[in-house]
Amino acid sequence: MTGLNALADRYMDQLAALDPCLASSMGMTGQEERLTDFGPSAAHARAELARRTLTALDGTPVAGRRERIAAAVLRERLSTEIALSGAGAYDPLLDTLDGPIQRIRQSIGLLDRGVDTRWDALLARLRAVPATLAGLRESLEAARRGGRIAPLRQVVRNARDCRDMRRYLRGLSAGVGGGVSAGADAVPRAALDTAVAEANEALTRFTAYLTEELATEAPQLDALGPDRYHLGVREFLGTRLDLDDTYAWGWDELARVQREMVRTAARIAPGEPVPAVLARLDRDPRYQITGTEAFRDWLQELADRAIADLDRTHFAIPEPLRRIDCRIALTSGPATYLPPSEDLSRPGTVEWPLRDPGAPIPTWSAPSTLFHEGVPGHHLQLGMTTLNTAAFNRFQRLSSELHPGHCEGWGLYAERLMDELGHLTDPAHRLGMLATGQLLRAARVVLDIGLHLRLRIPAGAGFAEGERWTPRLGRAFLSDYCGLGPTGFVEFEIDRYLGRPGQALAYKLGERVWLEAREAARRRERSAFDLKRFHQHALGLGPMGLDLLRTELAGRAEDMPEGQESADHELSGATGSSARGCCPR
Image (cartoon, rainbow, N blue to C red; front, side):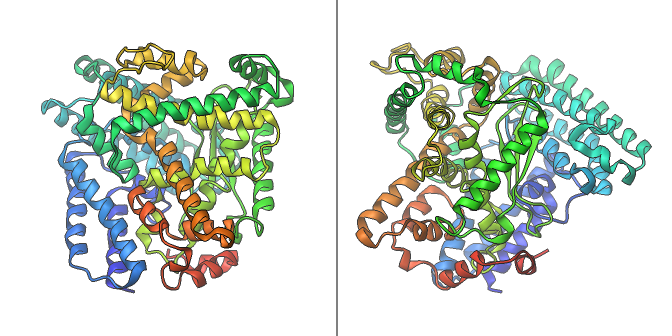
């Protein structure tokens, strides 16, 4: 083991101990009975860990291209973490997708696996909820004394998420949430009921604190301004942007997608406007499934078929990744993917949210989303990264979610790729890709930058021209101008953008880097260009910020890190047992 790899492994071990919730989502094992301490001293310890590791990295020699890339990836993430901490970006703590409340809920849900549930670990995490929330409250109070409170919108959204978590835990206790009833004999009922009751009591108190105390002082203004926004771009994309140019590009891309939607909708209902065609598809019984289990089975079959069709033709899919666990989450929000744990005890998992499982479930937009989350999207991308012990150190293998530009950019690229490969020949499915993938992500570029910088809507946009962006205009933009209702979804999107500055850019701008790199390779290699080999090389670089990705993809595939070709060959043919043997525990 080289000095760099030893440093990366040591950092990951220490990070997992300081942030068990993050460790769970990254697939690290060994912390399953703990939740993250969100108190002030623990936050300080995590920042100090980043500083110490960066200092050590500066003194660690690297040899060869592979280590140079690995060191650059780690340095970029550590320096960004330190910059965010130094700017107080983490002080308000509340988030819409990946804050403490959401991570607590996810960490418990990851252990809720029916007959495979580890009840000792799940009970330990349930019992840790009161202390974890107490630490979070202490940090929020410290930030409040310093004049730093999350905007009211985020306070209200987190209170709602607390109530959702209480409903989930009540279902868990009743033996119906997550299908745990089959394994109920594995845990004393009284112990589970007591742990859930105490966790829910703590959630009730924390909800009251948010709504009755913190909300009374929370600012109404959501926009964070250019300085904080640039930090968000650095955090989520690993790049620097000219925000005015990017804002203008977003409008151009939005117009391009809208024209493509008109052409595709005309194949379904000639002469009808796009919103009417989308509404028609929502009502069409050919694109509806009733029942949670039936819908889950449909998703699973679609995921399995995609793997079978793509393996050995357009990708070399390792044997451990030829399985995706599709699950239904009775909640709101987007579909999400979690990569397999590093010991493969947990498979790659797609969680699909259903707020009203009793209603007919539209399926016309689902295939592209599943391709994004599954294969050839995140499951292939993140799964290959997790398994590739021959080329990546532990930080590289498990830190994909710290690089949303790379990760979400690939996911969106995967949707378009499946269209190119003929997997969206049904015009309804292609329209779903354009509406929920391309249109929404282009709108996010416009809206995210516009809201946080309070920019003016340009002349010729055809929507509120000359006005400055507000949440009210944002809702009208998504629901009326883009036709992306219903109301609950639009509200969630607005809250999401305003709670995570820069994250919404990751999809479209990441996709742009992947597409530009592919086109550059095609021009450079001409008749020698091979799409499968390009993908193998590109994914073989591992997760990284967009600036570094752009630089590395500008080189020829022949210039891949030493030993990479043999490592890729070994990985693509790995069996379940051999892959488990090479993954550290």
